[in-house]
Figure 1 (tube, rainbow over the protein chains, first blue to last red):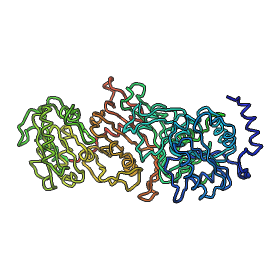
Figure 2: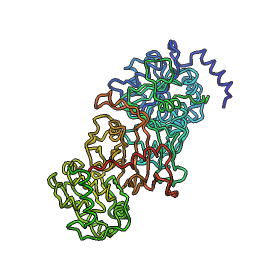
Figure 3: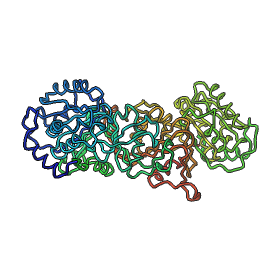
Length: 316
Length: 316
């Protein structure tokens, strides 16, 4: 693994020179602050396309350099073809696919440079385990971190791509009616979202039970359930917004008392004092005092959101 | 409506004399403290029959005078036949059906006396609106109150019978993916449970959205979601216990901030800081200090349970 100093030196070089292989458009004018867009799957691609439109906007607009990362998909060409069409319709001028089938491919310097130079990277759905099998501890994964943390790129992910944004990733989950310890299996994700566990297709697939199971295992992390065609937009360290047609359910178990350590793996769990926040599309909260037009969250929600927007360590 | 003094005088007479029409077994030896058993529907009648067994026990045992109240059912004879068999198998010696098709029937003094003399009354499933259409503001409904409050009878209810135990009753509810104001319609129930709204078949029918809708409308009341083959047993003013195969979900919205007054009736609701407690079967909490073997609830749950076990006003 390169040292942090090596990484920063390499990065400095990359920032100074356009990455090879790009049409090298001028960088967007505004300094981006780094956004994550976690999408619950099945985002609208035909009508308003509100979520994908916001991804283009937060990446810097029509001239932003966008990548569609299809490594989670079993059919990367098909996945790319769908996004190619819709991003073109939305006016994005520089959109390319990027794919990794193996860790070998995720060591390819040319691919890494493309990630480092991107203004926005959209991670398709599929299987989060396939994605992480290719990217885990690779230069490509580190490039995603540097793009987000150092260049303020916008990283979006839908369905499996959303699940993989977090550090502790919900890898497998049973459709649990009620939470139990073995309802979920956690694995390591990309770690761009450090203090949350994301579940997608949340209300549509009735996943409260499995997300509560995850929160029982890791009460230090927020459970984040995102409905289909719904996005949680996180502005690093500052604000959150919910877009689309559903809601985001936040489960804060930091005050919780549970019996997760005392029960058998398939026994139903007792969970006392979970704080639940339901944020439908249109919800927006700032955690800074600069924008007085945006509602300040009430105290319990503020504590939850402070954890949600907190950037994790850069893994570069 | 009779005055409270009249009611008490009538009651004193009933306590002194066996009610007409009964086989007049001796009253159970132990002074009962008054239990409610709210069952989420589909309680086991073939295997352990844990819930129905507990109903018999809390009513006073095999010699208790039990009634099966079938007024919620579209098929009262069929409903009674099922319970007649299972209660006989459980050794209950004095079980009779009681039914009300109309408010007229619920004014029948003989029926009222049977309710007043019962040690346990089990309210069948069906439709809680049918039940209340027959019982609302009738002597029979008041007799249920007196049996519970003054004689410490055990009142059980399953499915519609559970929903009707509360004062604010979930009369109609959409299978809402996400809460919205018009997802539920509240009506007046029996009022034996004064500070809660019960929903049944809770996890099986994915009713979190509709129960949250009810809590949004009435944040002063606890949302109580009861799974199938699961019972919430409430010992008046003292303790709660969960029996059966599922869990009870408690939603305490008293700290909640919501936009329920500012949205259109079908808009998704924003609900901030709902306290959720998930109590699987086997959970038991005492609110008094007398029994040191039973776990004391943590503070947030204690506040929730204090509301749940609080007896409402007697409506007699």
